[in-house]
Image 1 (cartoon, rainbow, N blue to C red):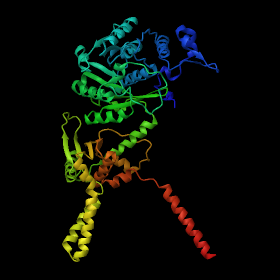
Image 2: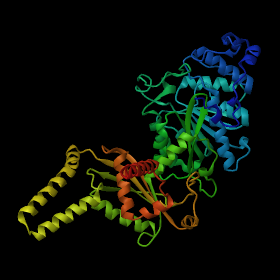
Image 3: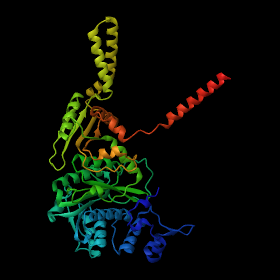
Image 4: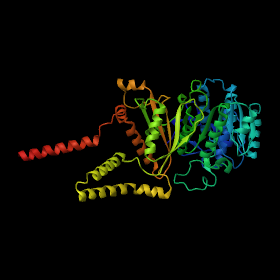
Length: 520
């Protein structure tokens, strides 16, 4: 399915380029253009040389930029690059910066063409600093900058592999934003592996330095997040693009673990390709609130995020659970009773009152907790009564067998030393407005709860042999212990089950037929 309709509204490639016009104006493009039987001018997107000529032609025609693309280097897709640039413009406008010629941006891993800085400086006269670890790319990027007379606006720095921000920040004290398009694949794993997906529509371009990085894009972005914690306010807005859908939830969880709550994400849609972008800042929300910044998200991703909300527990403060400390104290007692290890996470920043810990559980002590309690109470009662020894012993033996069966998997888990569940628990007060548009309409009583003090428990799955199901059952256990089931049912009333109603109607009709037959 084409994603063109989800492209940024200001992206000039939201409408397909006029290949016929380009073939008339540019002889180089004319050589690669072909006309099909319907008279439509096309090019072969699976040919690397055709992609190079297309990119160079569009840069010349739409931006009056003249660039060289060295052999065996990545050929940038301009619609994608523009989507990223326009989103950064939206973020800067959102924080009150309308004139982008006054800002200073940083591009990590600029590549041989230096595409992002050249486009930024060409469009907005923005001052850019760009970095790369490849000396050949630095030489090529410098040539392209000078070729377009942008050397007064763009500076190129050769950096070491170990650093992402350090050397660039040594040159300048502060930046308005940082942008990054890291290699998608993990070294020695990404390019050579067999894929079950359909082959790409475009010819693959780029060398190992541009496509692979140690640990893949996740590891690279995690390093960027760690360095951002060190430099914080030296860069106003941190952003990065990534190409794997699974990285979105992972990175959002990582930001939450680091207590970076002032963040947002978007999608970059172009043609049949989708990429993702994430941004965060350490500025106070009163000055810059990224959670309300403009974004583009397709329905599929939004619905997926709504499903992920099931790992949260949001409830109103009440007696004995009226504040953060009381909730944390209660959680510690319940989790200790479940024989789950608690490793508290020290949080340095006190701007957002929050308690965090890592939970490690080897036994499923929380599933069917009520049944286990009943079994224990019944067993104790039978031991005390001893009325009928034979009957009591039989029942006790049965209960012991049931108990041993229920803990068999737990014993195996302990013997294998593999945790059943490893997760991060975050507890705090609800500090941001959650937009539940599309849910059931709220009545007056629900509006009253919105004005109450709300508490939030966020549960993030990390690993474990029990999978996410074990986290869901632990969440349900906590909901029961918090005694907030009625609050959940009131807020999200269950919809009538159509299948059950249909079955009841069928049974009713069948009983009527039987009655009529008896009367006959």
